[in-house]
Amino acid sequence: MGFSTIAIHAGNEPDPATGAVSVPIYQTSTYAQDGLGRHKGYEYARTQNPTRTALEKNIAALENARFGFAFASGMSAIDSVLKLVKAGEHVLLGDNTYGGTFRLFDRVLRNYGVEFDLVDSSDLSEFENAFKPNTKMVFVETPTNPVMTVTDLAAVAELSHARGAKVVCDNTFMSPYFQRPLDLGCDIVVHSTTKYLNGHSDSVGGFAALNDEKDAEWIGFIQNSIGAILSPMDSFLVLRGTKTLAVRMEAHDRNGRQVANFLAEHPRVEKVYYPGLASHPQHELAKRQQSGFGGMVAFETGSLENAKKVLEGVKLCTLGESLGGVESLISHPASMTHASVPEERRSQLGITDGLVRISVGIEDAEDIIADLDQALA
Ligand code: P1T
Image (cartoon, rainbow, N blue to C red; front, side):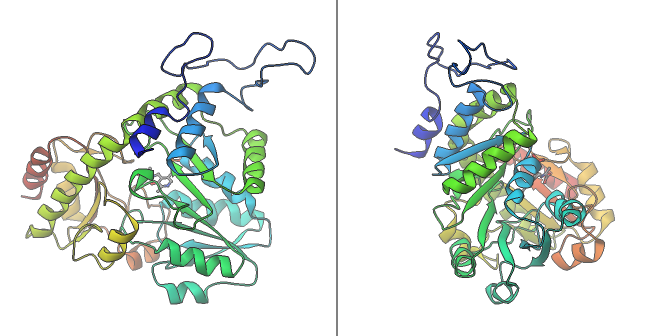
């Protein structure tokens, strides 16, 4: 079956009680049991909820995964997956990730004895040399937030598996519509559903999908033990969102390409980060590994002052954190999403004070471009 058919139907069976075509919001904390130890498969809503179950089946199918778990946020999904790593074990973390992911390793997991090193996972020889005997996991984002560096997932999976490490890929920027990391050899895929999967900037959530039964059992156990579950209402919203994922991603991609091309030709823009541009150093890899380039574009304005003029000069684009919604959002990674990354690291990565990031929405492209044009002027 095709992607859109799966998106609309997987997990979305009519409600057995009423025939409701949309999976209802089962807003309940518990379920009546028929007798001691006799129930309909639902005991307590931290453990199971039918709305969440429907979403878990849906996104797992989109990622071509056997198992899926919906969490309260992208960060709680990532944290729960990291619970596969024990104290004294080592993780290779891509050197450019969402700032919150870096912060989780640096400020939280470190306290629990999880060792990690940052590695440029787009440089396979550096990557290969970074393994240690106790490396159990590799965690990468591709393309990265915000400088859009691409990692060759099949090559990283092969290198990692040969050294006994599992590969986790944060697929938030591409969504399963443009990239399916498990098909490329990764072990686990994570998402902030807050972004493209929900797509309407009205829910915070996260997801983990995988094929290994033993790891899935553990992640399910962690989900229930820690309780960072996605609520019934949010599960409903994301389930509604994924039905239109294909059409939205096509529109984000169309607009993303146009905005990137416009910025690349603009005299006030020093550099554009977008894997869809032929000038992107990993354009060929992106073309091979992704079926589109999406709507995330970052560009260098040269200074904080210039960035501020653009960020405060836009009228249609909204200044704010987050991404992946239907409306265009514009942000300043250095002071917003990546403020927890030390300044020295930020400047090595290109997250300068002059860097501006746009989550290109699905408004009419000419209106987004006109807005950026007047702000740049
Ligand atoms: O915000 P939350 O749902 O917890 O997701 C965290 C997260 C994980 N992974 C990636 C790639 C992300 O971009 C994010 C969140 N990012 C933003 C809020 C942002 O504006 O970049």
